[in-house]
Image (cartoon, rainbow, N blue to C red):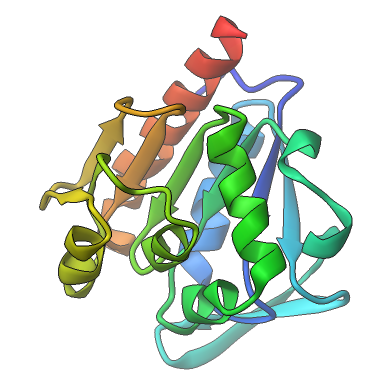
Length: 188
């Protein structure tokens, strides 16, 4: 994969609870495509990822959400994990950070339970996306059209929104996010 040279992509996660493979797989895809991934969280230090409910590895935080904005990045990736987006949607600075990518027409990729943060940011109305099946009602109630697909690319809005359901979809998710982020960069 190629096409993200010169692009800096934010990966927003809470201090704990992100599904590790949903962080590491897209991170590696961004690096392989020539981009620079940066880990953004709500607190300094390290984040603890999880393998479903079991603790995983720790990763160093590059920036705290209170100190950055969407202007500092070319795109955003929101990994899932059940606890991760629940913590993020309770932090007004994290929600505003996410909302900033939509208001600035920058691409966003989200997987699994990650769309909970999008619901809180009120950015899914009129958009078509997929997620872990249990979020279907939440997304529908927030005005989104939910589909059951490995990956869904929605361009019906101010930005491109790439979404996937679960870790088994990561190959398609990674490929789509690199392709769509590169395409948006080429248009700007």
